Image (tube, rainbow, N blue to C red; front, side, top):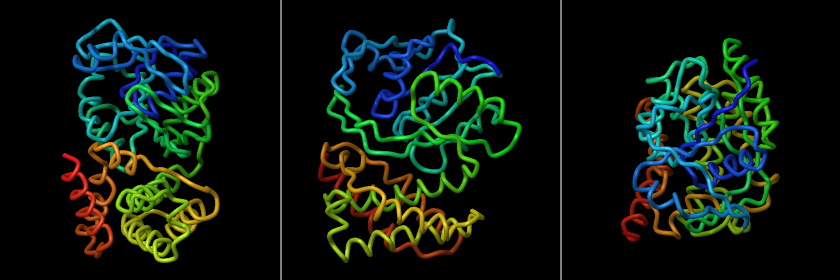
Length: 305
């Protein structure tokens, strides 16, 4: 099992900071943050604050050629994925492990169009939302990165990644049913992220309202129908677990999409409702609630501009 010594993180928002701060604190790897030139000029002499602790990270530009990454962590927003895929090329070799922490269900597919799939480990974040105010980021420690391999050919890379995350004190678990858990996270996001965004309410406030609680269930029901047509096993089980997590397991949440709306930022509605609408058309399934949500969030985005 190869030891991970050189790490690149693309994206220094909430999830990128969780990883970057832990790796920096553990001091077990040479960490670089990949930036474009505009962000490089902006960040290079400014600290990032994570949970009130000041961090100065080492930054790297895409055109540098003297750094070989053992691990690349892509933690951008979805609209930064193309930048990450294009600009990690100088740092990736045949043994580089790549993980994507992006929301949605397509980032790994996009990465495998350019890079060999045998070292791309499926992964996602589950936990309380990060609260971000410019370069001040807070996360309360309740989170987990879920990682897993769809087949045995990836076990070597999975084991190397697992050892690294453990040494870095990054909370994680290995899933033996990663595809099912991946879709469960997608159901959760399509439901809670979007409903909170269009209502302006937190999850706790939504659960106090009978109509909105039913609406949450119905939005996720549309995802369940899509999952069934996409060939996802145990789609009923996944649906029930997603609802249990939102209605029973977690008390409250202020999802990232609600934060984006309040801050006047562009949301990730394209990879949630937009993806469900697209897959609904593919499988001839009506998705009226996600169509309604998509239009409403686009209206809110326009009002913010």
